[in-house]
Length: 328
Ligand code: PMV
Image 1 (tube, rainbow, N blue to C red):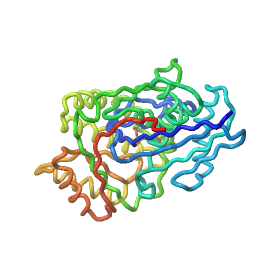
Image 2: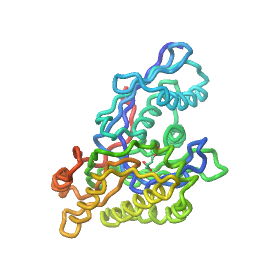
Image 3: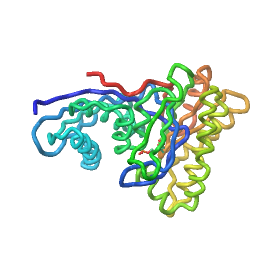
Image 4: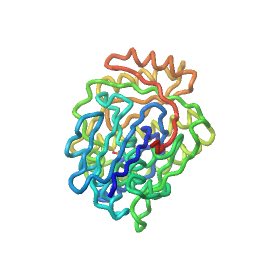
């Protein structure tokens, strides 16, 4: 076929109510729903070109050839799109992050959302949001949320349905100018990927079933909090979800600890500040970095306070941003 290309951009997202564990690891189907905010500044731009004959796909990340593992993960998603389009051409994929990948901020969410958005038209296909979400979910369970902007809920398919998930926007980015201060923390022990960490937790953690049982309550709370733009209510639901997710990981055998000393120091600083203000609430993914939710007016002071915590390498201030889009 004549080479056909498309370019898309997608921003990263941070889960306020997290998923941690898959109902079906082979189909990459999350065991629970999740609720996130799509960010404004941490963006991946991806160009996909199909039509260079048969052979292995090629992936370049920030101008450098990607590892075999990363390329294989991208190829799996492209294979699904090739099947849908009835084509067999290899793809050349070039992906750039607007944020420092070395700081541990690399996100599979923006990467797989941008890849899905670009690869579908490059293969000559059109797809609705449900179909895009199913494709993105096969790459990463957090990626479908980056298809939409603002506050987003992911609902996984029920057992018996076709594997995948749906996403819906709870509020557009302009509805609530919540700010997020990202503390990049040094000294994390060698990170176990979220895919490995959640599977290890599912198989061995004493707390995994309790996590599943309680999850719906955090989702209900967070949904209402977004609707009412109630920061304290959202912050409490986010901290409940975050600390229970890390408790599940700590309860695995052997235990998984994603935090560094700086992570813990930031938690203490944010909690100590909360009684006097500026008020912030914490969430932490599968790594040492801390994200602090706050009102717009408190973001600069919180960033300064957190930036002074020993072991914090830098801080970034983010706000709700838009969903993935095709740009060329
Ligand atoms: O599917 P992944 O690899 O993007 O896993 C995401 C895991 C967390 O970031 C910890 C939680 C979440 O819901 O984003």
